[in-house]
Image (tube, rainbow, N blue to C red; front, side, top):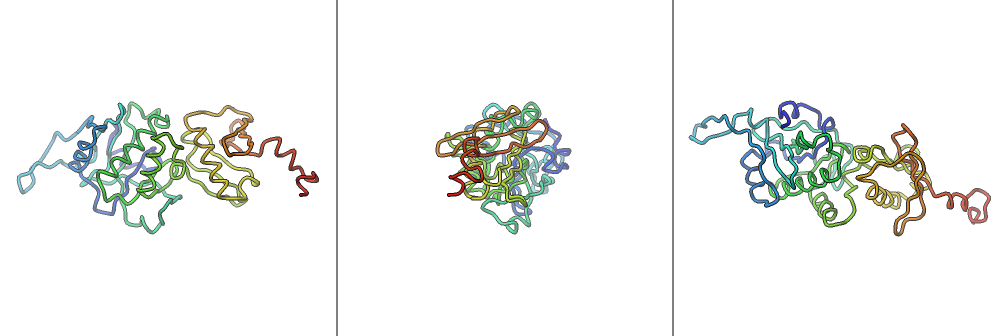
Length: 284
């Protein structure tokens, strides 16, 4: 089991996880999480460190701060995840957030985090698709059961997502739709107006950067990235050039140079030939 005190003291970006953000002072306690897990037939408590207890002034048994810091271990689809940051213990320290989806920065000025992290037995494979799928599903289920969640933060992408958008996109993916790239992968346009990703390297080992001509129409560029990421997650692209084609997507090439850390998305060779300066098509 992960040492809760050590984990809670880490920056969120140092440990891949899903954070449920609550208004300050409204994080759920152990009993609330136990109740939420107990009402979901897919979830089970794998470990509860609540062994040393004290009596409150009203005679009820209450967990000591040490037990709250250690959190709970929850079993979902055969995989164990740590739930850390339970009240009245310390919240999980948040990662820096650079990407907001269906949210404004001002919406999250007074929040604190409950964290969901892969358990020690799956920590080395935290970026494996079955682990990510189960962790996102667990986060969606807990957000629904606990209520009062202001937003969801995915630390590898330094992103914050509105609860409703997160739940809908995760549900669609689990039902056979596209990977929920928006929110799970940060998207920005650099000073050269090229679309770049942040956080995709956690899933596939590299980030994407689109050629300027593919980034000019920003909406089309984002749609293209949604399809590319869906095809890439769960795989590792070999070095070299790879043709990419999907329904409704024009011919593209994905180029991964050794040691670059970037997958360049370029027009296919046929498109570049047709659009060469001075050609009839280019002049038109």
